[in-house]
Image 1: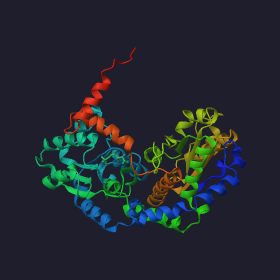
Image 2: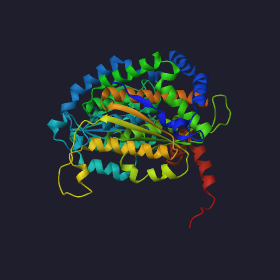
Image 3: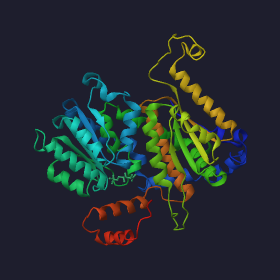
Image 4: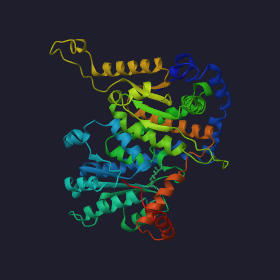
Length: 463
Ligand code: PA5
């Protein structure tokens, strides 16, 4: 079951040459960037793109399944404590592959714990959890590669204390720490306190870590077959490695995004699945595209200010929120739909309340309606000369999701190479982290605090 990338409607033949790529422009770009996949393979061989090797880590999945066997039946709740790349991937996999109301299912049907992903320091979010869950029946998976991100450590402190106030005064049995294998504050705490741990491989950055322990531990607890997820990713890896530039879906997608950005003014990239279960995948991709490609400097030190602004949207819901803008607002977007050919549930409309507004729906399925709405939106946008592509998934399951996640990560790496930026760092995020440490009084950040105070001495412009 292969996923496909359909780019018919990004071509000039569909949307005109002002907004779409001509055959000549596409061939020229494929020729110019034909060396990009090889360069990424060279980087991979030298340890610079270790995320590409994650699908082959059998030892990791074995140790995760050992932990799951030991704990899954004993706990009712599982809380992922992380932020950014240390949370979005776990949530994306969970939402894509679990029952949409997993947490409401009776324990027997759920087969595992209820899952929670509080990735914010909003006090109401945390208080809501501690007010409603039983600490004696809860596992916390604290995930931070650096071991010190303020939001994650704050939520961890709150939840670890809450565990200690439960019947287990020593909560090590309830805590799983996913962090750097050697360094960082969380690794030290884990050693001292005896937490079960999993590594974030040093060569794998947060937003490229979904197929490492970062995404796999929670997925396995939720009952997802993580081996099949990795099999799907490995299949995409093989396909990419064996294909020519023109048939490499990640390269074609990267070229289309970067060329439409540079040559046709498509400064925004909308990612719009027509499947509720992929909503969190859209959020995950939004971070991957934004944080990897939004860069001030090129790898040679020139100021380039690259990056398309990614937008996460959902069909059909956002047809009634966003499509007006996409169809008639500024023509500055490349829209990528995700089409799911077969839904896992079939729901048909009943023959009730005869009227013009209902009879044409009788006997039809919601899945059919979803696909027709997507087709209708695609036609309308194409007619309005809005370039759009479609990722086609035969069905959403572990294997197709593994393919999708792997393809989008490689597409991001390729786009980084085409833009000439480093997609694996995030200096703009670090600046915000440092400012937060200073404001919260962390030792070693006194000079930064003084700097911030000097700047904030000027009166605010408020009305
Ligand atoms: O993708 C990234 O690198 C970031 O989004 C990080 O995942 C995020 O900042 C959290 O960092 P850490 O895992 O160190 O807590």
